Image (tube, rainbow, N blue to C red; front, side, top):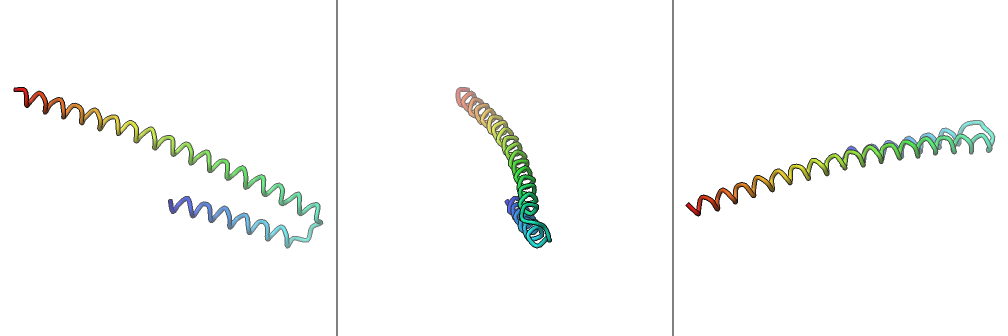
Length: 89
């Protein structure tokens, strides 16, 4: 969770720095707006990429947890069956 907060803070900080740099640059309003548009598009693409990476990692973790849960369920069922067989004898 701390890595996610750090990454979010880094992205926000980078965006603020980019905007501040663009706004203080000696360019016309039209050029400045175009620069802002390009930078915003780049940040959007980066955010989408991070979202997709996070979703992939989450899917992987969910699959692993389901697999482990299934294994534990099977082990518990086997233990119960073994206990039942032991009581029958």
